Amino acid sequence: MTNDSVQYSLRDRVATIRIDDGKRNALPPQVLREIYRALERAESDRAIVILTGREGVFSAGFDLNVMKRGGTNAIRMLRLGYGLTTRIMSYPYPVIAACNGHSLAMGVFMMLSADHVIGSRGDFKIAANEVAIGMTMPRVAAATLQHRLNPAAFQRAVVLANYFDVESALNVGFFDELVDPTELEARAKACADEFKALDAYAHTASKRRIRAKLIRKIRFSIPLDLLDAALLGLRRSRSQ
Image (cartoon, rainbow, N blue to C red; front, side):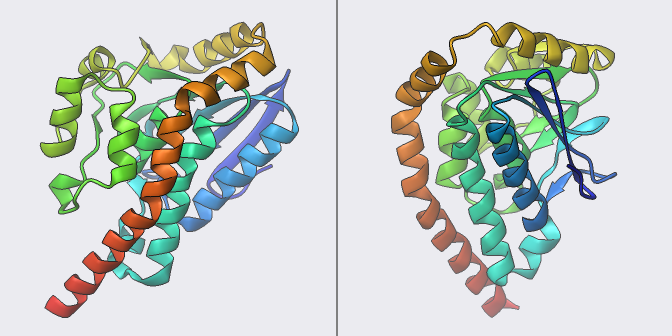
């Protein structure tokens, strides 16, 4: 399964979902919908998922051009993106995020929703940069960060929009491991092969049990974050 930006491939019960728009791997509504469709297909195939990007970038997050135009399309993009976090967190088989390079904002939240996150060594930046671009950190994003990062890094990531290099990102919890870029794909596949040995029912039941409170919190927060975004858009339009 392919479209311009999202490719799906299946081999030996491992589904690779690759985001590649040839640029920064922004996430407009149509790309987010394709990721959802790829996850549906992977679940139908009873597959472990490797979620990855393109050389040098995992994802730069929401499409800022859509955000700037505002309106229903921007709200639709936010709803799809925020909901994607719980879709990945509750996916019934292991999900591996193979981060190829830079990962920002919604790219980070998507990445941190996976069960195991592999980063690439290199001159790459990892950041939840909402505050730096004039946005109050959404509740959904904060909850996703908090469940992975150590407390001090969580504070810096949210209120100071800190950019982390890959070694720092590993140390504070963005990544579970780091590999050379040339080894990323092979390492992700090796992890997938290891995870095939897990009992599928126990894996699903356990991840949903320990994440139940977090998933409820995110789902409750989505309409509040969408309301905040709509009000922010209204204020900006009135100030122009």
